[in-house]
Image (cartoon, rainbow, N blue to C red; front, side):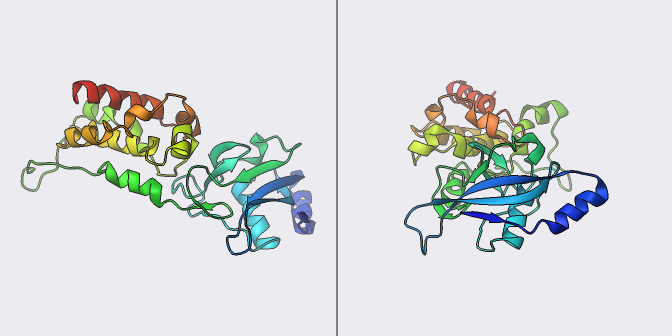
Length: 256
């Protein structure tokens, strides 16, 4: 099935700006639980600029071609993390993936991320992902009382220790790129461990031992096989595999 947009407006805009537009083929894995027994691939040919993003293409398809296409998106600037999906076999954010960075001489394949229950088209059920996130207690737990009307002071050096893992936007790109997570429904997954790391190494926190005990479980950090899929998938550039390794070391010796 091939659906082509009306390209007159795009062509006119291209002529006005001098920027060339291209006909790009998207092959999207569609699934409607009300009518489909299994997912199916649907082709769409759309006119795009090289500076457009995959999210722009999805908008064009939904708004101009097939309004039944379903996907999540919010900020469209790589902050909310809601539009994580597999693009040409790699986990990416649709809003950060430029058409010019893809080989448009071939079809662009788009499908939902793996390892989480598929709800519809590019939308998955994120509850198992957030359940693991909540289980590691991703919030500051401090037993001491700060001085009256004062903040909890932390040095620049202490803040730097966990700075990288504060960048997580909970998009699930890392977790759903992990082969262990695909095959083991109990594994916490990289994102949960990253968010545990953020507090385990926070000098203001007093519950590192609690989180380390949680992650010392058979489905915790020891299930990681260090394939680096998670680090490669992270749209924020977090060194996920390194963070997991640091948590492993902390389990063995205690936080230091």
